[in-house]
Length: 105
Length: 378
Image (tube, rainbow over all chains, first blue to last red; front, side, top):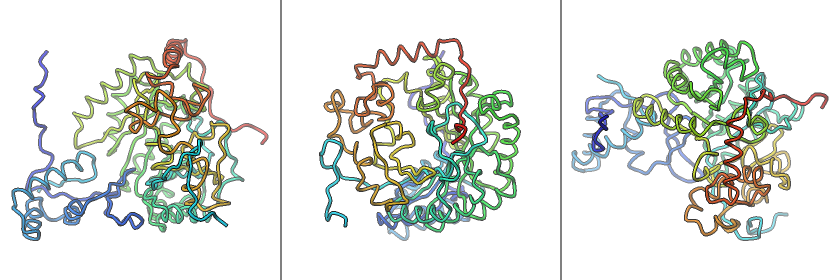
């Protein structure tokens, strides 16, 4: 029996042209008591930092991840490569939790 | 008058600092058409005439939201046994809460499910007792339950609710876990919760019928690990393992009185759904006091907050802020002392005894099921 090498990278769950969106039952909300933003999802409320909130606020169900990255890079005057990595990693974590869905164009 | 700047203290008088709860379990009724022998409701069930009204629940939800609660789990019993369930749900949404409906799927028609959609249910969690009619109907004690549940799951999909399947596993169905995970996927579930029976209350009466073997517990862990890899990005698997076979106890409620609270059908406020199994503990009621005051300032919630109350071996253990000494109710049940180290912990002096008893129960000839029922004549 051969074990898979531990370093194997799982297949990407989102590609630049894919369109990420919040499915039914997942929504951004204000946590008025704690004064923060949260992502409300089935049986889980996830506390968001300003970066997470900024990324998720861009999900309109129409634009691709690449377009969202470009917009954020321009708005925050940051290198697109770095934003692309942050956005992909953040969204991948949420796709794994089924809190973000992806539409393939 | 309330004391000014009253200092909350644990059961030994040590000062504690309450945090804020994220989630509330609202058990809106104990009535249920099913009779599952591991039901998490207390053995002493509350009658319909003692239940809070929908207006009462509205007030509780507003107090909960003011306190910091973000999500409510509307459960029971079977919440569908309340004719005014849609009104209760609407009150929760009006208060700004995210509404999870936890249901057996029995007794909610397609029309009522559409009404619950309009009222604002965000997410549906459906319990399954087996992957075929024979097992599902036998465990639930309800002939025809399987067919009703499958119809209900279809309506959930058609309406478009996010769906979680809740599969309680035990000695009699664990080997079918792979099929259960497949079924959840077929039903379009985003999540499946695989929860090994927790041996409190009703389940404790059925230990000899339901206690999994050590081999089954290991098998379940392997099935879950494999399925998580295979279903990555398609379905989430949350898993509550068999803690009688674990090395360390589970962090019950993520720490007593730290992140969650439970309101029982009659308005009793509990730190966890099994807390009434601690006989000396007194609980307060939303009929008499604001939920926020109960959270911050009641003896029951403060009793086991923080870590100062912990005896050895917990007190000097570096896991004391990870698992908080385990489950207080299990300590009560197995050690006869709610303060004790949870005896399922390998560091507990009672651990060997607990494991021996679990293995004896798991190896016993399968006992008849004792079904959950209300006692007659009350």
